[in-house]
Image (cartoon, rainbow, N blue to C red; front, side, top):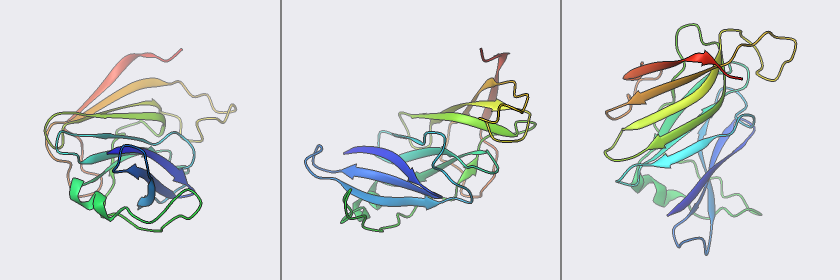
Length: 171
């Protein structure tokens, strides 16, 4: 399978090809509470073919992870670039990954490898609440890294397994 995430308003979308790119289908992964069309959604897969998505919501500026099981990807049919199919996949509830005083996040990235649920998420975070591109806000950006070593919790806002903080502000 070949896949990439994209967003449209508050919808996190997936473009999926099951024939090495000869044909493509588009479907909805989830509907977020805020606009996901702003800070680069990401996706990766584990060894079983389950997909893990990361995105930032406008408004709250929080970063979330959701997953779609391999077999559920077969439902992603019918939508093309010119004719969006409207299929909504059976994604897990979104889990917020930024914690503590990190009120604003940007540029999330996700890596999944090996066994189901083993993911790493990195993002830039600021303790100042507000839009990341608002130059009037005194954002100081730090790099954050979060991992999960077992299947993602099904309860939204469950804490990830480990939360690392990079010590130096971003340049």
